[in-house]
Image (cartoon, rainbow, N blue to C red; front, side, top):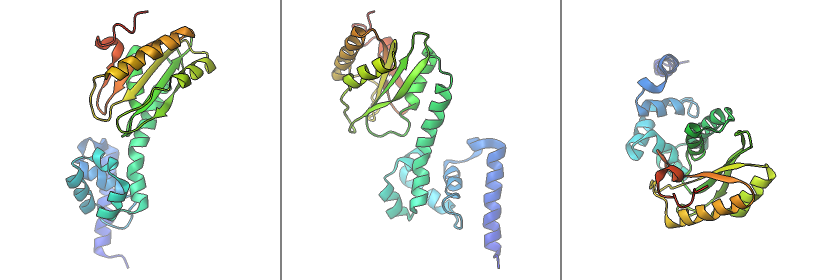
Length: 233
């Protein structure tokens, strides 16, 4: 027998889903977004209380998704399914953004920065990305090519050269992220860029730019004025 509480619970979920389909998440509070997402991992329990607790602990939806898995299980009683669902959110966001930007296939100055930034969504450790273009200015390769620790990544120059030769590239863009949030390049960043620029130039590939990526911004070394001595030809 279905209780009145169960009917009320199901009715609330249905109303929230209809509200989303009409308006998207613009009219939702962050805890409501989290509450609704958890419907799909916690089918028979009110997810509102745990959503409030999660937001109270981590301050925002994004930080909930980035919280340690074991902490979410231990402190909030979330199942593996629920934790997996939360961890999928930033990864799905990244794939969504990358696929839309990649689908344009043409390298444009106003889209290459957002494309590279999208490749770092949800990443908490440093990584290096590379985009290669052909003679007609089309994207022929884009991917993360190296992973590092929380604060350092060795630039994989040999791998960059191999990829450029393999794809018969004419232009290259590289990026790496600063999980610390700093948009400024370090001396090592600038030294590495110079080495990569010269090495690719020697095989007929032009390094067009190197981007520093943070959670909310990106910096073009070419246009920042901090690497004028590098991008000279």
